[in-house]
Length: 431
Image (cartoon, rainbow, N blue to C red; front, side, top):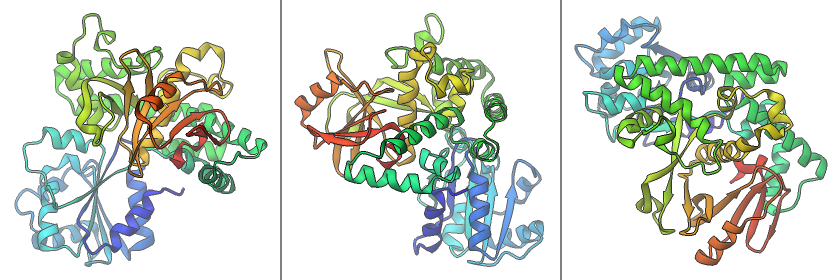
C-alpha cells in the first residue's frame, strides 16, 4: 500500500544534512512496515533490531555506545555485514532501551554515514518520563499518523478519483454529481474503517466490516494494555477513565473537554497527567482555544480550554460500538454524535497534513471549529456534517477579522462564493 511517508524517507536518505531518524507514532499506524518497505526498495540490505521481541539486545548497549564498538556486534546479531550508506539500520520499539536512544547522538557525531531509522510507539511517553538525556539536535524526528482519506482511496484503487478531487479543489469547480456521490460514500466508509493500515488492507481485500471491527477491537485492547504497562499504578485507572470519556464528550453539543464529565467533581489536577499520557502516546490530540487571532497562534492559546480528538476514526466508531450501517447511512439515532465525529475526522486530516489546529469562540458564543495557518494566512474552517451550511459564526468571524478567505467543509460540492471556499468533506486531505 502506498504511504506518503515514503516520499519523506526518500528525501531523508538523499539529504546532505541527514541525521539518525526517529519515526514516532501511535501503535499500529504502520511505522515498522513503512521503514522495512523503504529499506527493501532503497538499500542493499536492512539490519533490523526489535527491543520488544529481543530484550537481550539491551545488554549490547550497557557498556559502550560508540559506533565503533556497536557496529561489529550488531552485524553479528543481524547475521549480515552492516555497510556504510548501503545498509539501513532499524531499531524498533526503541522506547524500551534508553541507551540505544542516547547512542544516536554518537552516530550523528562520529559516524554520520551510517543510515539509521528508529521507531517507537510510546516515544513521547518514554522521553518525557526518562532519566537520560535525549539526543537533542542530533536526530531528525517525524511522526507517522494513520492513513488519511487520500491514502485510503488509493488503497481501494481510486487513483483517478483522487486526481479529479485535487483538480476540483484547486479550481473550485464542482465534481460531476455521480463522482461526488461516490466520493461521499467512500468518505463514510473511511469513517467506519479509519486509517490503521491493517484495517484498510483487510477492507480493501474483503470488504468485510465485521472482520475489520475485530481488528479494531484488538488494537483498542493493545492501547489499554499499554496504559497498564507503561504507566504508574495510580495513573492507570485515571488514564482509562479519561480515554473512555473522550468519545462521550464528542457527543455533546459543546465538544470542549470538561474534567467534571469524566467523573463527578473531576478536576484538572486529578486528570491532567492522564490526558498528557494519552497525548504523548499519540492516541489523542488536544486542540486549544485561541483568545486572539494573531500570529503566532500558539502565543494566544487558552491552556484551560481545549477539545480532545482521537487519532483514528475507525477506532472512534469501534469504541462507540457503532455498526457500519449506522455510519454508512448516517441514521438519525447518531445525530448527537455526527458533529463531534465530523470535527474529529477533519482534525485528523489537518494534523496529518502538518497543521497545528486551534479553535475560536466569541464572547457571545459564536464558534469556529478550526483556525490554521495556511500559506502565511490565518484561515478559519467551519465544519458541517451534512449539506446544511448556514454558518452564522463564520459570518461573525469574517466581519471581525476579515481573513483572506474561509473554508467551509460539508457534504456540498466544490465552489467559491463571498470569500468562502466550499470543500466537500472527502476533500479535507487537499487542504
